Length: 106
Image 1 (cartoon, rainbow, N blue to C red):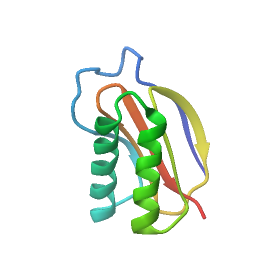
Image 2 (cartoon, rainbow, N blue to C red):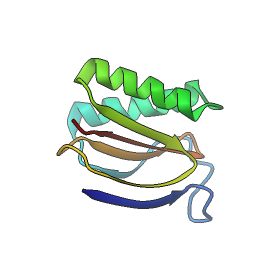
Image 3 (cartoon, rainbow, N blue to C red):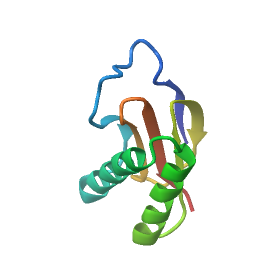
């Protein structure tokens, strides 16, 4: 189990001008990591006013390509603690004010 603690991208420590993904935590490697970061960034850009639609977009794409059960949280401030499969978690800041946590848990 991984305790990711609390995330608040409105915090003064977070640089709001970033326009590129910044990894906070991951166990993913190689092609899966690259694909996941690209997918998260694309979803946040495609649905800038709907975190729910961005999360659904990411989940459906990951379930289709890598099998279920992927879970996604997209938002500007959240805390979570999740159980995940080994090497199947990503926690990334993208699109300046959003963060995405993506993990697989069957």
